Length: 81
Image (cartoon, rainbow, N blue to C red; front, side, top):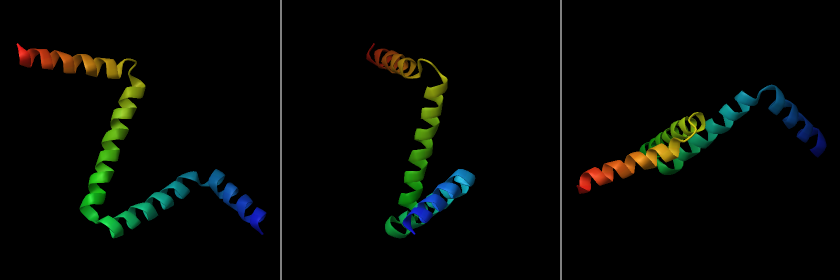
């Protein structure tokens, strides 16, 4: 029985991965809204989306973080002098 269930889960994961992830994320989101409220959940999701965008940009550009560090240092130096 246990092995059959594992095989069934593996088959569903292979065939409908997007639906499985959508279901899991929907359940997690609903639980978060129930437990901590809508606005806190919205803030957490917003932070996740911002992090995803930064991560995608970092993956696409070769020296993304080095460029950001240089920009920050330039701005700090301009503020000082």
